Length: 168
Image (tube, rainbow, N blue to C red; front, side, top):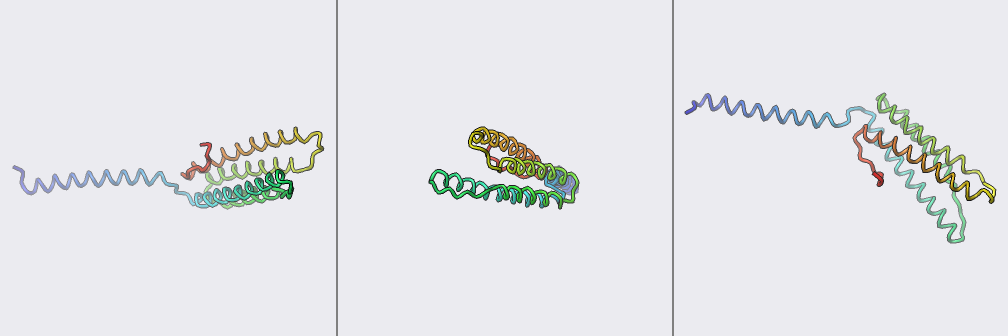
């Protein structure tokens, strides 16, 4: 039979192992969390982008409905895209962590590319070229959008944020 002293030593050893194991699990899990201050600004950037894109989508939908209902009241979304891209750049520039800032700057560059595509195709086109211009605009916007979302998703991953992109 074990003496009381041996039992206390055994219990203490078991408790020490449990505490070490729990500490290791805690340390491992907490190291997965973002540690740089840039991630809060990144979250703000992503939220702004999501909200602004929802506003732009609403205007586009209203424009499309106006065409089908013969009440063509068109609101140009080009300034909205430019405002969005400029604000994304402001967010990116305000991040202090260099790695996060680099990722956010890439996102800002892709946002700027998307705004430039929108600006490129905002000029009126002769009727004879309308269909071709619409196809080119659609293709260019899709490419720019995909590049933007890829950069945004890398930034989300950097800050351990889930994507809201339904295609993923």
